[in-house]
Length: 233
Image 1 (tube, rainbow, N blue to C red):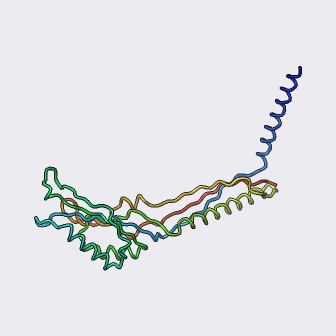
Image 2 (image 1 turned 90 degrees about the vertical axis):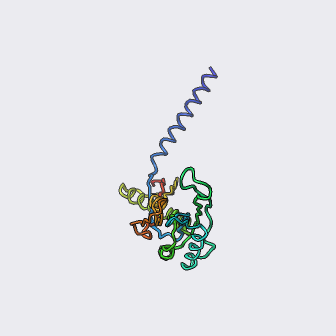
């Protein structure tokens, strides 16, 4: 008999706790706020590939291409510390060729700070017979600070939405019960990583020019989203 009473008391206590938790869920409102901003990138990374090729049956040597590249860097006013060697090697143009006929190549990474600087660099690099010049990455030096500011604005937007909705039913919002944040960072890699800015010579030695304006890339888009629960008073 004693054991039956204890079991019943335990069952009753569990039921009360469940009911309290379910009742608590009726006294808050959950809303989502967003904030968005576009940035002009001030970190622009270029990949510049130099590759030997044949012109009028003579090979244009990598040493000459390299000298022409550094002359363009100097004429564009770019600090040498913003230029790093990304890759160096050789590639055989046709299967079965001897090593002496292999085309050597070298790839540099160039860091620029504005679209204007990019435009000037492309002007100076134009006479250089590069194999490929492409934008590989866009960034901003204050990216993390701006993202944090956007989260604050998104939270404020969520609170304003909650105030309007709760006021419509004759109540007021109280203290926040939960805040959950999300990041959305849109870097237009589909446009910058794969779209050619300028390709002077392909494997056949024929000149190609990109039709698009290379400096007209899209801005970086940042978006913050915050979901919050506020007590209803």
